Image (cartoon, rainbow, N blue to C red; front, side, top):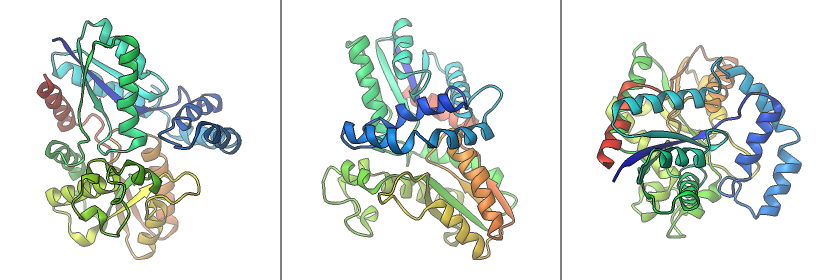
Length: 336
């Protein structure tokens, strides 16, 4: 069988204009795995409460981090695609869950290349219904529409993969070499209900304070457990002392309960507690994007300094780091 690789990331507006940001947010937020309400409720929430005001604020944020070549997330993803393509003897296509290039166009690209089997790598280390799950479902739907005979295999969430952890440590080490008082792991937040919906047992996730430490089949699809596992594996490999790191969650949307503690509150608290040199890494992202470059790199830095902090270091995501490209290539070869 001739195999091809499909890399999928979240996506980005086509430009930082208000119109393009509104179009992107509408597509993103109308995904039933992002706002998991019945269609009519989702449509009303998005149209009446989000789209009238949020696109303007988001467009300003995108303007602050936009590169001459385009969206950082898309540009970095394209660079990764090209590097992986150079490293393996297989076609490599890139799709985005929202925006362009679409997942459907990426699947069509592989079909046009004559492939008979797709190896899918959702570029999300941890399982969440709004990221990993929605990518797999979208690819399955595209294949069913375009060429049902295509075979599909997927890279599982790689939150505790030794290759992923080693690549992460290699990328972070230079940014910690100059010294730091505290290392903050800022993961993208999720509504608590998403964890409960993804729990196959229906009774484990968030049922007890220590649910993430008690072995359960729920951990295979539990975002919270998996981010804690990533953190534990990273600090063990990197030798980070137990009193010099913590975990928080960013990018809250809406009023429902979300995972805590929140990153902005944590950054403020750390600065007020006397932390002068704060390093922040965002392991739920493999490519720098709005949530890392603007939410943490600009807003987080301002929060830290206003609260009395001094040196704020945003550690880049894996991006095009050589060890990460080697890891992706190794997974692709293993699939063949």
